[in-house]
Image (cartoon, rainbow, N blue to C red):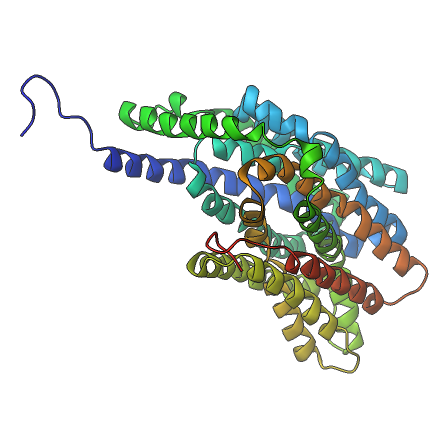
Length: 443
């Protein structure tokens, strides 16, 4: 019976559950849309290349370096971007990022020389830098520790989802010649514009902190802020125990860093060169290989990748295993990618291998990012994740120029794809060597 002297205190569990639901529905859909646009704008050059190469006369070497320079620009503002979200304003920083990367993506339609292509790609990476690490920091403002992995896995659905949708939109745009502009130019204009529009809207749609959320009740705001503040105090009490220098002296940190460096060396190159490789495979088997045909097949491969993210997240949560799920994704990608280049196979068989490649290429990601918290102490993980993520992005500057150079000297796509398959496999070997303590989501 309520106390006659005052209102009954709200039930803590009920208030917390209500706050979680509201945050999930308010924050995650918008972040998901932003990441879909981000990934499409970084990757659509691979789709546009199908037509750009002929129109502009660029060599494969030019495309390889241009694809890689995106990641060189990306590295410059990655850490400052995360700090700005923490100490300034997520909505203002994300708005700046969206508008500038959208403008840079649309500006790709104006390139006509290799140097212009290089500059445009570098500026696009510079403009988008800080978004992914900024989102990770932003999640710490809204999601308690035990809920962040699930929030991240939902966001990562944007990667294959973006590529799946982008391939279909790009297929349509490549066929257009509105106002005298080529189809590849419309790919950049149309797919870059949503970033600018969303950037203008983000300050009105996004909320920086729970205490500013008018869509939460006072009890929900106070409870969520209290939970998150306690986690920050706990983290501050232990992160000082391990410096970056000490963390870099640990074998596990280097295995994780080398694992993702090798995997992403293969993965980022596959992202940009898969449309080119699929076109060559279709031609080799005597199948129709127009640009729309190629991108239709690509969309189905990325649909399998979407399924891979979903299945991996549910399976690794259900079993508590992260390490072997990650290794299975890495090794599986390498194996099926290698099988796809065996000569003499009909297109139906090649496509089956590519679908399995797509499934496993996105199967390993979510389990991987849980591993640092399982294989390292909390303080070591906190100071190591930034270094590991830096290695993940450095990989983009390696695989793309190497693949482009291999094509430029006359090596077939199969040779390049086999190299990428080996990178995936080697990444799996490094992760397999990590020791994960039993009882903590262990192997």
